[in-house]
Length: 459
Image (tube, rainbow, N blue to C red; front, side, top):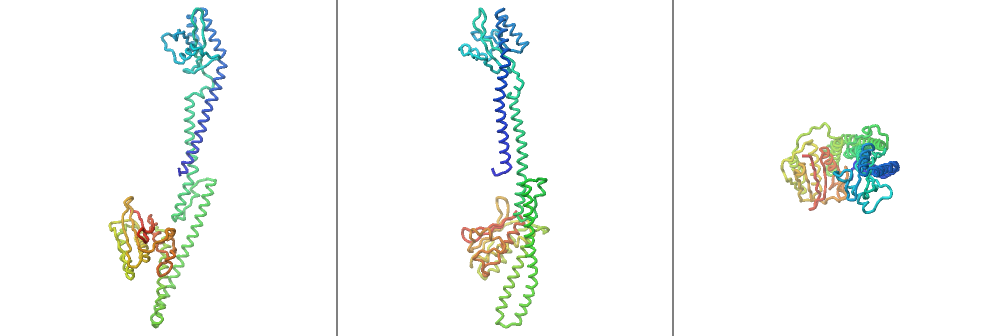
């Protein structure tokens, strides 16, 4: 069981039920035993009186006297009387079927296994007790008296009462444990959801105000979480503002540098042209880096307010592949798109184009010369999602670094040279663009070699 609510509920529920069962069982054993013992002491004198009255009536009037006394006891004292002869017949009621417990008393009497002290057996709300009855001129008889059994607290240990008590305990335990488990686990579940939102990039999430008026350790944890989220929001916000401001500020001197380079190229001789071309290359790279930084900053700010429409990923992938193949001609690299079919998702077209383009260009950059970058567009069968899978034939990525290649500015050691690697922002931009559409980006080393990156979006 991994659910905290279920664990708390079951543990408390089982504990309360076991306590209730133990209480009822102990009550049944101790209370009934004590009540019966007290009742036996109280009825001992009455029992002797009843037996004596039957014996006296039998001595005076024989069987007729026993019948009259039995009728009086049943009417006035609510005492049931059985008189059983040696053949096992009830002399008072020949037509009445003899109860099995009375037969049991008679068999014990026949076998000579008579109890020295009164032995009471419950029967139909009464307590039966047997005594031998000697009547002059008659064979030995067995007198069985059914005495009323109504001690003051006997109702507490009756089977029906015990069953009702158990049902009441179960009902109270269920309600109490459900409420207690809910009270303890609900804020934890709320914190878990808030943590998941924070991990997904929603730094504005807060939980303390949603926990009501709690003043316990969980409320302290919620307040600590809010302080942490607030601090993270401030730090990430300041970082984004810094990137945005620096990128914007760099654009102006970079533009002036390009103008100066063009003027210098017109006035210089051939000896300085090589250095100027190198300066122009570095300026272009810096301009590209600034553009990617601004794009990443916009993506991390969210996509609120931007228009969404249907985007055919197959058509988009073909356009991106055509551009990438044209730029990769000097390295004899081809870009092949397969699995073409209608693969439509709803999203922001420029962001999706940026995601696919960054992944494809990254594959073109690292694939070996003379190879083909394979781009497959397909629709997933299990849930109808659409996917763009890009497979290159490069050196691949060490397994322990596969998750990190989507971090900004992260580059594998073999790709840190400017000649072969970018600045480490392309895959980070793709991850954030796809994430804003509720999709996922994953990477793995293909069994046939190279890296495979999969962009998966809702269909």
